[in-house]
Amino acid sequence: MAQTYDVTLKTLLRNTAGRAVYTATGLSIETWLDIELPKVANPRLDLLGETHDGSLLHLELQTSNDAEMPRRMAEYALAIFRIYRTFARQIVLYAGEPDLRMETSLEGPRFNYSFEVIDLRDLDGEALLASDHVGDNVLAIVTRLRDQRSAIDQILRKIATLDETKREQAIEQLSILAGLRKLDKAVQEGIQRMDDLRELILNNAVLGPGYKRGLAEGELTVLRRLLEKRFGAIPQWAEERLNRQTPEDLEALTLRILDAASLEQLLQ
Image 1 (cartoon, one colour):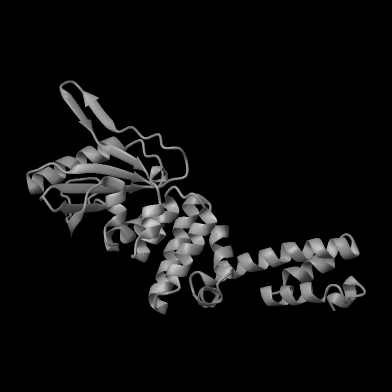
Image 2: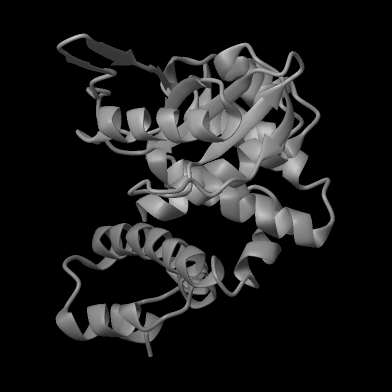
């Protein structure tokens, strides 16, 4: 799953108009560079860009605390130097949920090396929400937001303006990154409030099954509470029958519960 998060973050950072990178680093990337690093344990670094003044910016994306990060970054630094004959400014963008506790330096006899780490939770996401680029809006989900629910609704409204293919991709990216901040449920609830996005997700081969399960679990929780209040403890046979219902069936049962004289009549 960590790789899925990393790939999603990398794709969004590369394809946005640059607001996200500038918000995090204060630098504007003119060109992203693709290189294979020779003789390095992790031969492909995440992102290497050239700024307007010709300097290099190397970004690594992390969703977990890696004790080996200083060694990895030092190897990357030397590998980049071998190719470009200049050292890049190196920054690790941390998007993980656990508190940041990675070391940022290596020291030894007559040797001193360090790099920067930025916890994306420390960034104000309002600038990304205000961007005209939906990719920036989606990336805001991993930053600091004053009102998470309002921000999610704002992002979803922007996504709703895209064509169907781009909408589907943006929803998938938002759903993945929301998992980093335990906002999966909040995103699902936001989608439920928007009929066009709800239909798009329900028909999505990747996201649809999980979304339908979430809907069913929510409907089932509400229905159980109503049944217990109306008829008392739910017997095993009724539980088994409820667990076989679709979200649509559960919604229909919720509407019929006041008219049913007994649990048997409702679930017949």
